[in-house]
Figure 1 (cartoon, rainbow, N blue to C red):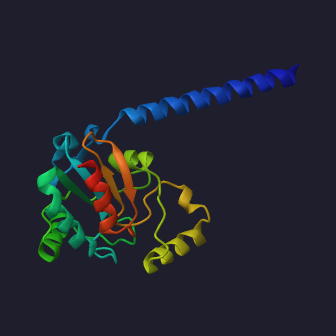
Figure 2 (cartoon, rainbow, N blue to C red):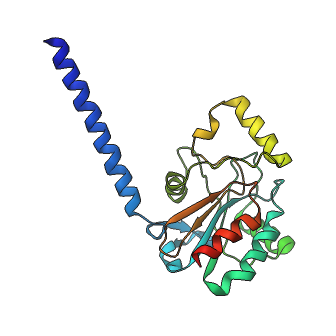
Figure 3 (cartoon, rainbow, N blue to C red):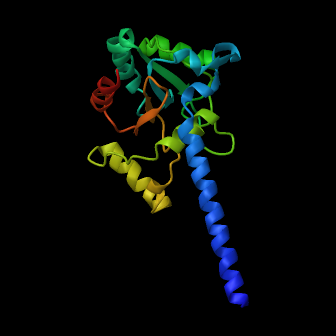
Length: 211
């Protein structure tokens, strides 16, 4: 009799947790990026609702990274499609090798001076851990890690590095490195995630589908 009661309790607990997980998934599905506010220049609050109706590429960046030259590709993509309803939202992050040092002003001066970026740049944030910005918590919940391009030399290096630390690292949705990108459609829904080794051509193909 005790065994039966125990099984019933366990079954109820499992059903309860499943119901909770389903409710959480449904809640996440009902959200979009417009519900989030971020910090812009001088620390002012910026509601992402101002970008409603536009396709967005949201990216965590760094100024002293091997991927930093991607700023040039991003600016080129922005110039090609900004008049068609496209915005790039740039969030510097110092969590990966401390490769985004400096203040907002220093980072912005570097990016505009060296790469002539003209898309919006926001205050430095965390994208992983207990202090992760809620926007990136949401983005990760919508699209997990997509895998590095191991045909690329750097992609293979990163995959080997992370796999030595954790053989199942690719099952974790956390941001793995600088220049991870999330593509958001005109309804504010996350439609694609691009790891740092993805090419600008890869992004452009998907971007054209949602413009």
